Amino acid sequence: MDLALQLLFTGIGIGAVYALVALGFVLIFRATNVVNFAQGEFSMVAAYLMVVFAVDLALPYWLSFLLSLAGMALLGAVFNLGVYYPLRHRTFLPVIIATIGASILMANSVLAIYGPQPQVLEGWFETPGIQLGPVYLDSQYLLIIAATATLVAFQYWFFEHTLVGKKLQATSQDKEMASLLGISVSTMIMVTFIYSAVLGGLAGILVAPILFVSIQMGSTIALKAFAATIIGGFGDVTGAIIGGLSLGIIETFGAAYVSVPYKDAFAFLVLVLFLVFRPQGIFGERVAEKA
Amino acid sequence: MALLEINDLHVRYGEIVALRGVSFSVAEGQVVTLLGANGAGKSTTLRAISGLAKPASGDILFDGKSIAGLGPEAIVRMGISHVPEGRRVFPGLTVKENIMLGGSNRRAAKSELSREADAMFDLFPDIRKFTNSLGWTLSGGQLQMVAVARGLMAKPRLLLLDEPSLGLAPVIVQAVFRIISEIRQHTTVLLVEQNARMGLSVADQGYVLETGRIVLGGKPDELWGNEAIAAAYLGGHAKPLAANL
Image 1 (cartoon, chains in turn orange, yellow):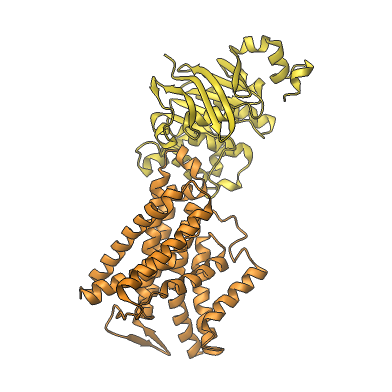
Image 2 (tube, one colour):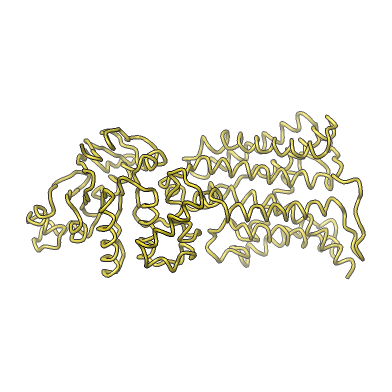
């Protein structure tokens, strides 16, 4: 039982990272009808930005954190202007291929600068963690869970209680109608890309001290997050969060009770089961229209 | 000077020519109805005015200024509000949120839009009880009310209404047209209809479109008096043209 609680904590922590990246997938998909295959690279680039600021330049951790997120906002804007915007009137296929191209470009640019050796990033806190009864709460996992919960709460408030949030929802539901009402569709899509890049970046920064900072970390996280969006019901925001958390928990339990080497396989086994028996995902039955 | 003036408007969708030289005008304070069969170019005319379709040639003057080729966001800010075919109510937003977003062409705070949306329910009492229902849960008639209310939130000088009666039960159609006759007290309306009887009943002026051209125009009485038109669009009994319906 103690072990189960411990695993649950760890699983939620890692699942929260998948959920953040999955949210980025879903928000961009809903705004543009395109899956952004560079979403995982956002996490990878942000982790390397942390290495630049916190390790190479030895800036304070909080400052590096803010600078990295600002860098991600900028990257999101550039990504929109360079990858999506020129192709916005085309079908989904050229856009998807462009996002794959951008993801290769980002990975190889980082490779050219830092080489293939993984980098190490310390966690935010010096205290490694606290013992709470039978469960040991690692400080980095606590930070991940707290940051994700805060962000999900913020996002809920933003989409449900602000006018911009409503305009974003309207844009994702019917772009032509939104433009007829005077909503600037291109601005709304810009906001979506910036926010999704920051989300992906935040996931990368939070998970970096647990994994190594490597070129491959983006694709690993993105694959899991993509599986999470399908399990949750593609295009559904709640589904992305639930899907991400369940995937994190499943793979942690699977690794502990069944087999460590097959840790990654559990996530994809669940994905395959969903694709076969419930391809619409957990929340897929409802019309996916709520952001 | 007319509020809206359309001169020799041509619109193409790729190879397909949708409008081939349409000219007409709408005077301020009037209701003008465009009639015609499916594919005659009625909706395309409205889409060109609101900026959804780019004119290949010809001009569209609103209040004396050319708006041809401008984007829809710019045009709705100038005071033309388009309620498109199919209502297009945002399915995942509530009725009130849909209506509030109708004011997106103006700089208005959220609280102001909320007040105005509440006031809009006085004109549309039938949808008041659905204030917080999501768009997709509504029936066709209710959706049409929401769509028109949302269009009015733009405080337009010209309201474009595309087939508001389409797919509605007769009693609902009458309710919609009662609202149109209230709207006309303070807003100019360009109405597209297949239901010629209802469309002309509220109009000051009517035009008949056929395969991308205006073939006839005049006051409703004159149109009723034209035998061929009466037969084709107003439910008369001449045989050959009726096939066009």
